[in-house]
Length: 250
Length: 375
Image 1 (cartoon, each protein chain N blue to C red):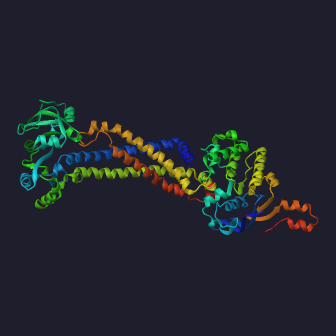
Image 2 (image 1 turned 120 degrees about the vertical axis):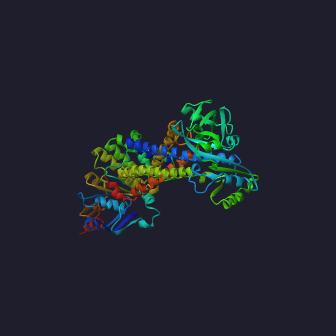
Image 3 (image 1 turned 30 degrees about the horizontal axis):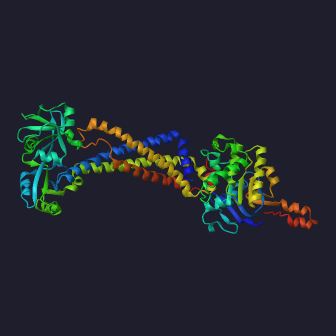
């Protein structure tokens, strides 16, 4: 597993320091893992997601993407469209575009992808998500679940290494939620990337490899379920403890 | 890519149909005004340039301090002295004035030293009747004036004080302002407007046209109260034309600013409403210039459509202006000129881009996370 993102001492404050977003975050995101970022509302999950996603600027600290700082990248927009995918809590599809155009929009700036290939990829993903029959419908004409599946197709169309999802199952029924999680899991297998999901949903925690718990802008625990599973088969308590990466920060 | 962006831009405009309609309507109205004004200015300039440029008139002379030809007064002795200069082939006098016709409306009246010469040079032709005979108290009347005042060949026109003139012909000219006027011989008009022995403009024809710059300089030196201008440059020096140019220039710039303000306002509103969308597009990797391009396309759709509508709508305005104002404003064209169309297109592109640039740059400069949270 390679390190996709390394975060050290990440802090974000708002209103000239009056409001603390996140504080002193140290975290490593490795390829092949699904990370569930959990915690109560306002604990800093979305802030951390925005900072990792380059949608916000840290007040302090550093984030390395495959060992590179953001200012070493050719352009932020190119980096976003090649490295990252976003799924927002409220889908945020463009209402005047069709579902297919919305999915295609994430590939639009990439001139190396022909329009034919773009269309094929979009349709294939929509079919995969079970909403291919709604491809030509405008985003405003379809249900919440269909929109969210469209939003996930948009986030996956360019095969990002890192997928950031903010409550992707928060506004859909349990059946759709399960479908979404399946697709995300499948995505990890094909791309060897990583997914960081901010969520309250226990189903997401179930499928995640690593559960990161946040409280008051800080990470209070990181539970690596893979380490626990491997350690279950090991012979000693020491092995179990050494593989189970539980980190507590004050 | 361009197809989706254009389609996206078009659908964005359709989101707020009423606002788009009123923006389009405002731009069209402003461009209509712009087309009318600039057409009036350029048409008059073109008409004068054609007369002077094509008819072997080398130098035009006007009194130095006159603001326009009708206030220019040139004494007979200057006419004679210029006529006697070496290299001068002929000098023709033109007197321009106004008289109330039948005690009612003010009309333009031209006195010409030689009817046939000016008929050729001012581009008018008799459509009915015959040419005037000098000293016979005769005049010819423009087609439009004849129609408006119900006059015909054989009718008498009275200017008071026993000054009765016979209409001996009706003329038409491609110089539209002439069609609303009267023409008589120089002496008669001098008497009618009480300027005996005077002219407004002298047109000097040289033996050799290549001597024009030298002769112009010589006349200006020898007659310090006169302003000799090479004919080609006359439209730029004539007071009324200059005033028209200044007026149209100022109003044109104002109209363009207004059109820009209308578009600016529309796009400030649009960007404010779509801030969240701009954030999402940034988050999924759209470069800033691509987002700005969407707004540029929207703006170009509005400004070009509005401009083309405004330009073609102005075709309907000129006949109305001709019917109501041709006797007052003498140089109204029949339709907007073609160069105005290209001017309108160019201006609409410039305005469209400039008025969108600020809101688009502002809208795409917001922190992406803030933009996505924007309500």
